[in-house]
Amino acid sequence: MSRMAGDVVGTTGDRLVRAAVLLLVAVQIVLFSSGYRLSADDAGLTMSYLEGWDSTWAYAQGAAEQHGRIGMYVVGPMNAIASYWSSSFAVRVLFAALHFLVLLLFARLAGRWFGNDTGGVLAIVLVAVHPLAFEHMPPNAYGLQNTVPFLILLVARVYCLRPPLAGEGPHPIRVWLGRGMFVAGLLFSEYAFLFGFALVAMECWLTLLGSGGRMWSMAGVRDAARRQVADVSMLAAALAIYALYRWSHPSHYDGNVPDGVAHAWRWAETSVRHVLAGTMLVRLDSSVLRLPAVALAIGLVAAVTGGLAVRRLLPAETGPHATLASAGMALLLSLLVVMPVASTVKQQEWCVDGGVCGFLDSRMAYPWLILACVLVLHWLLRAAAAREWARPASRVASLVVAFAVLITFAYNWRQAGWMREASAPWQRADALACQPASNKGVRSLIDPGGAIVMHPNVDPESYWRDYLKRQADRPACAMRTD
Image (cartoon, rainbow, N blue to C red):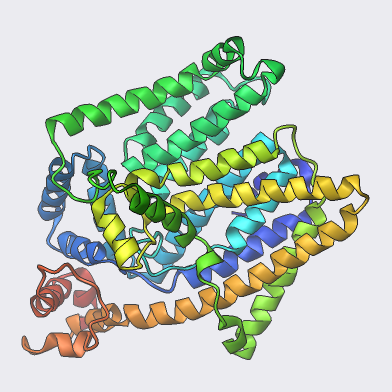
């Protein structure tokens, strides 16, 4: 992680910035490791894992065919493994670390697009204002579903494929390896495809910007298309594979059928609220006033560190494409990646009618929205510099970031406490599994308040009896009784 932090801030060589990124990541990892198995799917996948490989594979195969998702042959078992092993604190730390590694890699790629200082500021802000959420959001629900494919896509682009406008490319073997990785990452799920599409779309935009005055001419568009033909071909290949499988296995799942596109206003509202649900903008509260002294001290250290690191990088040396137009493109991409998910009646009912708008795609939109904000910040600082206000403007920006870090930490601290309480039934169940117990009333012993979310067709009492029985048969209990 230390090496990654250094890579993110690029050539600045600033130890303070690297240390700030590492500190903020460490604080967030501790908080994000508090809760686990927070969705009904996580509970079901855990039971599938306990029932053995045949059950896990049957689930994956059934989901792939019922949902029309070819990636479920991999994602299904991966989710089952992640759901079961998330009961281990060390595994949760790993999941959280990988989740934040995605953000750091995204910042590294953005640094290549818009300048290393932009990447450094983006890394700090992405990590520091990232909210901990109860909704269907990784890594506390679906611990690896987004993380693994996003890592594959970003590693392929950062280390294997040549970004536009970045000079000479790597060795051809590395390029072909990167292309294979990129296509494989796209096939995991529609979320991965949309995220990969957004990466390519931004690089196509930068290629158009690089055309200068020919940007809006047919010649400029043709030149950009030639430079991006490999990327577009990879997207087309993955989409063709996905579409062919979907054609042979039509979806019977209401979560990926665009049956709500006719409700244009609800679709738009759901899209916007899905984007905002991944941010602190809809989570502002008075948590900072209720922090215990120790937590407040930690939060202040994080806030000061984040603010000083941003101050060190501002005013930033940005590339020629760090413009308001690029900020608009990033904002547009934050909406585009959630619109397919928001097009379903299911999501519209959850969000518009039920007020539950956070979902897997909210995590995917988050880095694009924050990138847009950082690019706007650079534009404002350039405007201030033109009036010789660069230094005071940078100080104000640093103070705003420091305050945002503190507010986010306070919110996440309280959320972490609630998540520990919500996940406590799993710990009680694991403790009871290795002890002789009655087969009746186990739910009242494990989860009397009904904190664990399960699907409507699951009887909690039967689930917990089955969970205890299967956990008791595992080696961990055998070791305790020896």
